[in-house]
Image 1 (tube, rainbow, N blue to C red):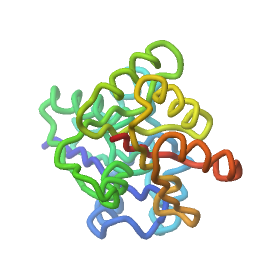
Image 2: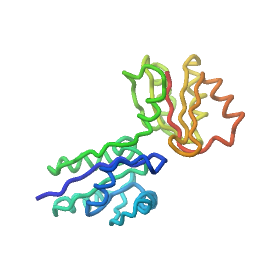
Image 3: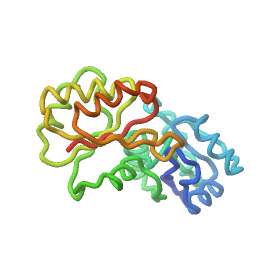
Image 4: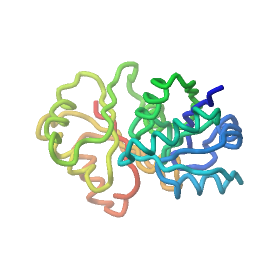
Length: 222
């Protein structure tokens, strides 16, 4: 009998944000595939879980995917965890699931934390319809990305880094100065912060508080 591939959501910051089911699955599987073994090791150590780890990130070759599929073919169950949150959104989880399904393996979702859902839940705006765009391109396609955001008539959600978030918002302003922004910074962590306002107000806030340009950023534009 083939093993099961479990797609396991892990905390986006606060280690308490993991489900009892996720902990049980991580304890029961034969191996855990993850984006960064160092990150996942810290989580497992916190909950006294010891399992073989397989690295699987955006630069992994087909051989690494093959190792996981081989374990499943041997009847061993494998969990996949991204660095933070729900896999398959901005990580190699979707490719792993695709290959597992092509191999006729069972794939089981273990739901939990998500930066996307976390920020949406406190947005205070109508998010019944929205579009999620992942991370903006670093160079090629960046302008096209923000032209698309500017043209949308529904809220757009994307992730960004502290090195680019303000630069990207100012680029957006050249296409649509009237848009408003909600930024979630360090969500669920000790220095969690949610900043709201128009583009000019957001820019002014971070100019006044440069020490806050750290951590992971989730952005809603509406």
